[in-house]
Amino acid sequence: MVYVLSDIHGNLKNFNSIMAQINLQETDTLYVLGDVIDRHPDGIKILRKIMSAPNIKMLLGNHEYMMLNAIDVDGIIDYRACSLWYYNGGDCTHKYIKHIRKNIRKEIFDYIKSLPLNIDIEVGGKKYKLVHGYPKDYYVKDDIDYRSETYFTVWKRIEYGEVLDVDYTLIFGHTPTKYYQLAKPLEVWFGGSLIGIDCGSGFPDYLKSQGRLACLRLDDMKVFYSE
Image (tube, rainbow, N blue to C red; front, side):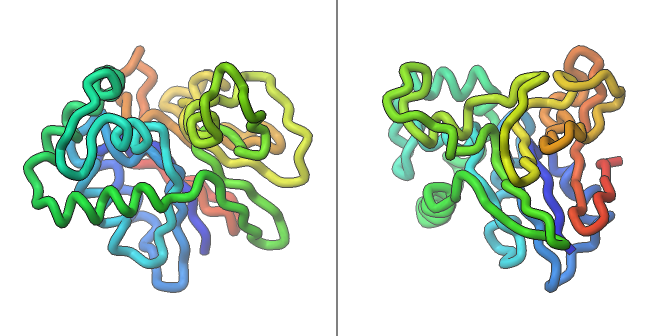
């Protein structure tokens, strides 16, 4: 079985709820589309669980990207980048990671630096492209709004009503599905060739949107929600 989830945002309760429901087997694969950390305090704990599981694959999210820009393995801080990271909920992650051993921090940083931006897979004869924010194929060099392919891919959002001329189904996180539909609590959004799976795990009470963590099984399109 092949599973996809995104934007855990340090919510260990939600993550454990999903993992208990899907009961991931050695022959299964789980893809995590970035933003494991920030907003809730257990992002690094979850990240290390992901790192230790050979059948869990992860993409780089904008929150991991912010952490790489804000601090290094020695704890040296770029204060401008750190301000942006803290504004987006990175303070709890920083508080945790600066108290763990340097060799563990190095493992974490090396892992994050190795993460891909997009992953192409095929399940049941159907093609899928997995992204955090946007397909990197659409990046235009020297775009004044996006200073690099990585920045573009993790930060750019799929807009409501946007149509992409693609021969695959695009599955993305980054943007909570409340921006595409009115369901409460939030639900996975199916928009033709687009599937949004960020159901607001980082914002359980934001604007009373009733956020939660969602996981999509691609073999039969069954959706699991954190309890």
